[in-house]
Length: 190
Image 1 (cartoon, rainbow, N blue to C red):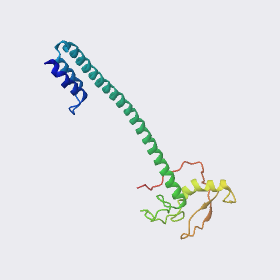
Image 2 (image 1 turned 60 degrees about the vertical axis):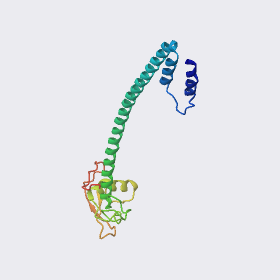
Image 3 (image 1 turned 30 degrees about the vertical axis):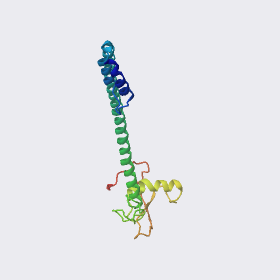
Image 4 (image 1 turned 90 degrees about the horizontal axis):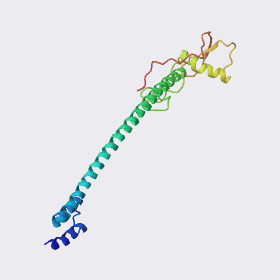
């Protein structure tokens, strides 16, 4: 009787039946067919179960480590996003101030025909120039470049275009502060 089960066991081990047997089912078959091997089969079955449990525990430990690493990565990502958002806000403020100083659209500078603020016509001198921003941002650069020839160091340009032709008038003023920090314009981005 035991001799008849060995070919069936061998076929099952080789997968002739089409199904791939599990190690536990093979060990159980060996234990059933040969009672003298039952203690060895039981030992091997216990070892396999212990190995599977250990692998499951290792997988859990790896998962905990991965979660910790993911949390650290997430915190770094949040910090980077906050830093980038703060920088974006600061750059938007500068863009708005410079656009106001030049009388341009603060959203597209006249480059976007679908702009909701200017419809693409907001190039510099499109609207009245903000004198405070002009004095703060444009005048010092123009003087340093030598573009403006002023009779005294207190002369400023009171930049008021006359109906879009970009003409300027000179005005004397002693309230120039080229080192002042830029102030935020009243515009907001969409």
